[in-house]
Image 1: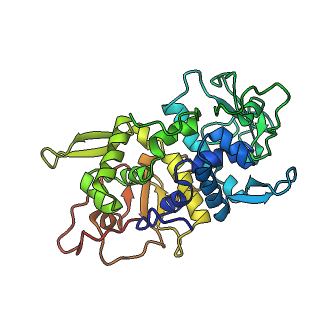
Image 2: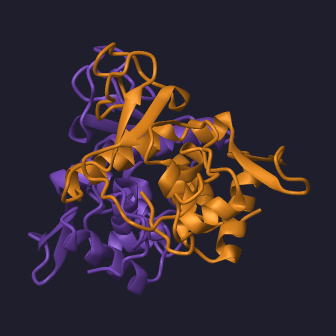
Image 3: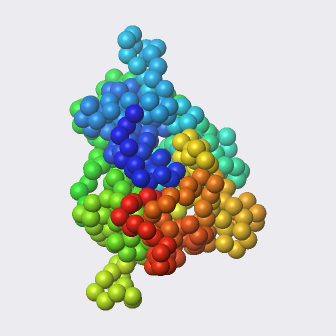
Length: 190
Length: 190
């Protein structure tokens, strides 16, 4: 178990923050929504020390937000998949993102646009589809590059893969096409 | 300006977390929603070192989520009032709280219940009023004690004041009635 930071703060917000309030944890969760599953992909995309990443993945797994499973493509390796419990953080992640779009915007506009996979409508601030008016679960959201997503010459495999529209919570294919990635050691993210 | 933690993470979620992602900041924001305005009240309610609290209040003021104003009741003192920009974090705070209620619940049920001030309807998971179906802004929410709020014999003035229903963002009266508070040095919170 993680140390209780907010021991005397017995409220549901504090209990949520006990799990996801550590530095970097929410960005690990964001990447899990993008379909990042391998330790190495989280690592190059986030550019954080491996020990910090390992700690955050362990914490999220312990609390059941991520499931640690054998990697079907690599013997003895594991992947971290967002569970339903983890995916239910989507309304909070979306609300935090919307606040950022409004109050700390990218110069060029939104870097990502989120659409409802069934009808293609863009999500509004509340996470509803502007077209069909339905509330959209994370699994039914497609993230695609927005006008603010600048094209960087060098990028890690996750950044490269996210240049295409991608359905949230579905595994992101980070196997680079030959010549597509010129330097995986330079870390950028989106 | 605060040091950029998520320098390479140029997305609106990361930009939001640059402002409110530090440990304790969200609980300072929660207390500001409850109408806590004085340094001393934040301090006894949260039970954190004064230097940490001062840093978080400065950061939130710098970014315009709190406004620092002269305290009309105490010469040379200041109060910290949630601005519209700060209050627009309500959907995110509510979503994080709802996740906690669902996935890390209090044994006795919700400690706080949130109602629409205009019709008395309880808020649903999305922050809409269950009765009139309107989306409710923070200013129109009343927080009241829920079944999980245990009665503690000793408590700080904020905890005591929050035993009564209170309209969010409106100043909380923390002046204790004589004999109502027996030990302000014991910190509990809700």
